[in-house]
Image (cartoon, rainbow, N blue to C red; front, side):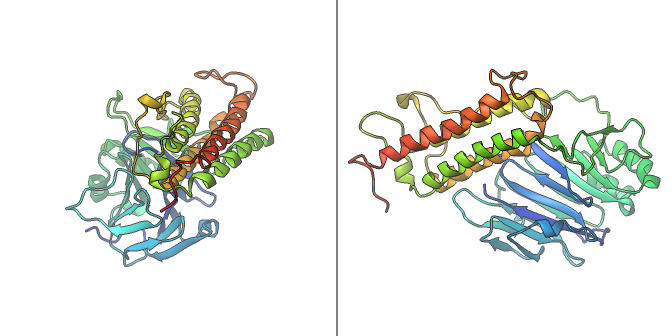
Length: 387
């Protein structure tokens, strides 16, 4: 069990939203600098840990959440769960939501139990707050933590977020170098030699055990200045998202049996349609994003095209969970849409045979067409009735 962290002035808010095929090691994780200085850590499974200074007001943006004492075990009926790390809390907890479970859970870690590949582990000690997600270890430290004890806690971390003043920046860099940290995230370049400022407010990281590493510390500056998308691009994204949400509304009502229904006419199951729509969006956008930032891999979850060759990825998922899967991919597209910022809407970007405009319009049509095809199956004489 971990002890109370030194930086008493900080609160950690753990936020869980709905539930990628199996989000796990290798999936891209977003570190987002929030207005006021907080950092959000968002996973592909749509779980998020937000670390925020108690003096800031990020909590006002967390609408529709349960706020509880962080050392309590919690199940929430909300899509998001906020956990406050108080002054008396020992934190060694897991944030998760299993497939086909409506509730997000925040429970004490059981060392004897295997963790879900989608879970976020949050551990709070006197020396650092450490978040482990999708194979990545992320530590948060302040000026009070820049000592030998912290060195041992953060050793080998993929990312260390240092909320320190300029006078302590050099100490943070030295500590991160000694601890063989991959990246050190600062709020300002002042006092940091050769620091690289991220364009926007989001740093993308992922676990890649096959990647070559020089062992050199990567010092990056992450500010709360988000890239503002053009009105035209925003409108195209919203049209695609609206079609996706309408499709989710149809699938959400279907049982496992209905999702696996094989029409006598040899057409696809409803589940194939859900996987196909989700897989197309994920592949096409990850191809574009990968060329802009290699930390996002090309992700292909497309099912086999012909019905006899198709094997469901999750034959036991209900329609509601497949709908969440579609939403996870839609959120992935939006989360990293800032990578489209500098791309002309009507020119094919590297890695894609689609222009951004054509792709977004095609995705809108694609959701509408396949959802209409699924609704036709409801009229077939052998369509299974809901249990």
